[in-house]
Image (cartoon, rainbow over all chains, first blue to last red; front, side, top):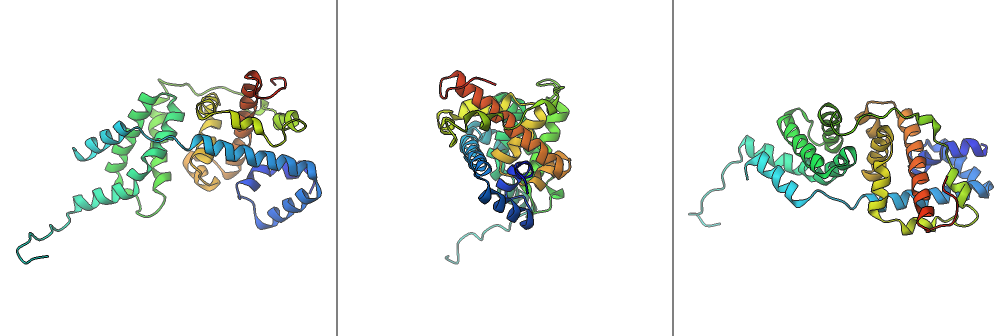
Length: 74
Length: 197
């Protein structure tokens, strides 16, 4: 596997959406190629950051009441 | 329980429908709201869209196979309602050349000074959400389902009615495009030195 192929599968790998064979090939490439390893580490941090920032927001309490009222008349 | 206590009423089909709807559908209200807000970019429209989705879902509840993927089913209803009724008056589907986004510009810029991406820590929730709202709609909906709602490629493909391969390529470019925006934002706010792309 070369760097280009490795980077093409970057997010699939981080999302655990690759086949076991592909995962093994990527891991092997990352061990042998520090620049790709650094890039994967950076993207891992980025995805963690993204999730931490975007998952906190919830529906307003008034909307919850409105839905309950509309559905069940209360 | 004493012998003169009122016997518990037998659950009616209406009670059971309500109970299963609360258990499987209403628990996803927060997720639906987050998706609605990113699609409409307007809290009042998001409220209406979620409300409408819940009404439609309740009416169609008999068609939902209990215990399967309620969240995906609800988001599909929400997205169809958005496309049919809201998109026309809120946002217009953009004509963006999705191929023009240059991948990995950011890592190339920061790999010497900040390879650990410390600049991300300085960017707060609202700034990230604002940057997501600036993405083209096809990118935005894919990224929201994946990174905000944590859905698998297969689930996203089903909701968006596109092949898994298309989910992969859209997600790849959506994340890169967002990263580019966040980097530019960080540079212009002095969180990191560099030149905006």
